[in-house]
Image (cartoon, rainbow, N blue to C red; front, side, top):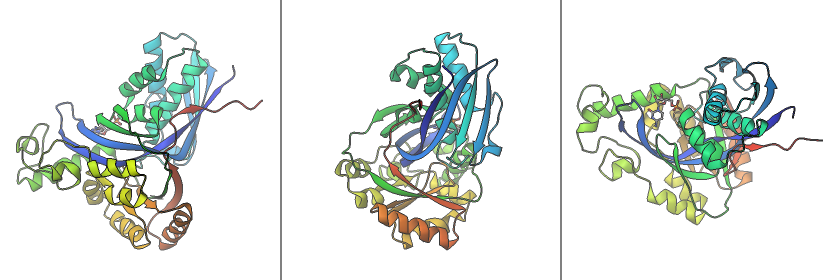
Length: 332
Ligand code: C5P
């Protein structure tokens, strides 16, 4: 076998409810992941030693050494299976922007797992791949699974969402800049500590101990608890397949933190809503903004108008849900 190519989607978070910081620095989440048709393609080929090369959108900002999440996934698969098939070279063709809140790095890691499982004939099934994926990063398991799914824990404990086969039309507005995920989580902790009247939160600090409504956005706030809660209105919207309901139910606890670090995103979100989007949200830790459109035609109009409004670097359209990382059949 000369090589295996895998296509892997970006993810959106339709809900992202964030709890207080844990002792290990992570935050417990309840999130609704949604895979969309913006894909990276990675190819794994046998090589003397492990290596990675990256091309496409934002390639210059992706590390090409052992820090690359795809290579960490390769090492994790090797450790878990004892596979001894020599080195592997991973080629990544990026369309998912880097550090954009779309889990592009996690997607590449998921794709590397699926590709090497095929290349080495290790024959792991999806449940085993999901377990290894969860060790590599918080969003990697979802990129293996795809579709729409509820994530808990750090986001790695997944339950597929049962929903009709509705396809939603999204417009993504890519920002001129990046946001670091840890910095956005830290900003959220600080905002919450300030609201609770205390000093900046430390792990298990005032925001966690207050027991009161330390959050102002998302289902957790409505339930008067700092523990994240799955939004019943969002799940009901997904079951109904009604895009209008879904647009109203989108929520992201990280949004105020992302906006505090990247204030220009307010304009982007407002522009999308003025142009008729059914809902607008910062994607994950940002800075990409996502907009839900009522139809493919509306998405086309919205994308064109947003791009003309000068409120983002570029736009893309995508539909969701789509399947997770999958081998692309070789052309013979
Ligand atoms: O797991 P991953 O490497 O994707 O996470 C990146 C960073 O995002 C973590 O180091 C942490 O700072 C933050 N994070 C978090 N809580 C989560 C997921 C990520 O605080 N549930």
